[in-house]
Amino acid sequence: MIFTSTELQDAFIIDLEEKRDRRGFFARAFCAQEFEAHGLKPVVAQCNLSFNYIKGTLRGMHYQLSPAAETKLVRCIKGAIYDVIIDMRPESPTFLSHIGVELTAANRRALYVPEMFAHGYQALTDDTEVVYQVGEFYTPGYEQGLRYDDPFFNIEWPIEVTEISEKDLNWPLLETIPIGTPDPIEVTI
Image (cartoon, rainbow, N blue to C red; front, side, top):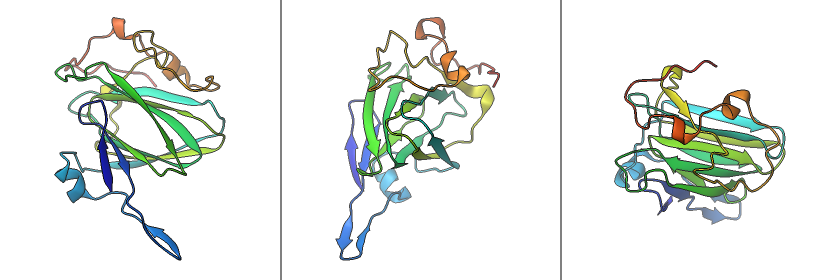
């Protein structure tokens, strides 16, 4: 695997190191030892698959508070997505900064999302599938989110949003939420 650091502290783009021959290629997509060597949390508590029917579908921006904070390793296995992460760690030098990365079935690229990073993505094609390994169990009482269109972040989504859940539409704007609060905020799903 090829680990490339991003502008956000502790977030990495991970490319496959393909070993090709006449049959195709073989590549390691995850290795706990290599993750540890790069200072990343190699725990996988859950593996999730997300399917999106329509180009423009947006999911996000989600994160979980401690003690249920999640790491994620996100990869698009069919179609293409624009994946965005926001550093929500008050002690971080990249606090409240964000990046966007295009993940596609063709580029086979993955994005490592550290704990306390808000995460969301937009499907760039119809029938998009995304798989992500998560380092903690989903815990609804610790779930937080931000509005995908929060003017503070001014995220430039590549295409018009065609589908989004009511829950994601109703996340608060940054200016209205306490950042890094240790007390979970109960969210009704």
